[in-house]
Image 1 (spheres, rainbow, N blue to C red):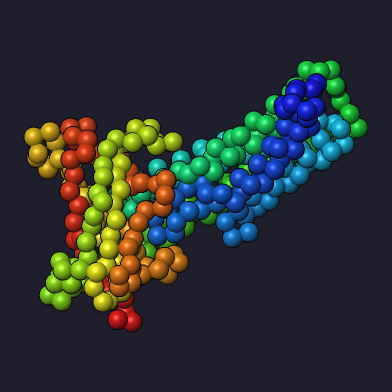
Image 2: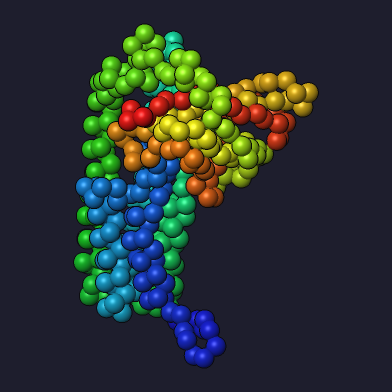
Length: 333
């Protein structure tokens, strides 16, 4: 079944749909699917030790193999199994985020840094990689289904495609179950270890932020928030949410490992009704983010914005203020 794509005789057939879907699926392993605080953008492939990613990679290869053998109809098996893995991963991700939020709220109850932790959880955002994955499996399935509609039935490679696809599906789901079990069994101990070792989770007496007179003076004179904009914005996965952008400039002569910015939201009468603290500059052992050096400007990645999903509905769009509320000097200053 042929479809004319361009003038001049170029044709688009079902094999090309499967090839394109396979290529997109491979690409989808390396593009960001979620933005995490401190860590940054995360892809499925991650550090290369993810069996789930290898299962999807093998399914992409198997679909391309069936198309290369002119048995495009058999790509329905790797396509369907890849679609199942993407759906399972998305559901597992949502469940994990909700579980993390619930555990965090319980473990941080009464902790003076509970607001910081809540702000970090609010910063978690799904990314455009999910669109790539959805388009990939859609193209693979479309090409295979159209080929079957054209009358092509079972082939000599169907058994290989079917068995291989279900084996890879089992590997992918098994890996997710294994990782989930490890997480659930260790999450309390991990949380306790983090609370014991991280200055963000420790009592105030054990982890004092930069609140001395020098830091306060430097912050007031040299660390500025500007280009603040706020409005209801459309998030691809969260719907319509309060979103905002700002820039931070270090006008002084010292590098900063941490900058906290507090945004206050106002209603139509100008009354403050909510506030959120965000951490645009946060150098840690878990990220490769650089410090904010003298004269440097921090800016959100293009196309991204901070979302404050828990702001009350009474917020008047655009009415916000922002200020630097805390800084941390780099140790090499």
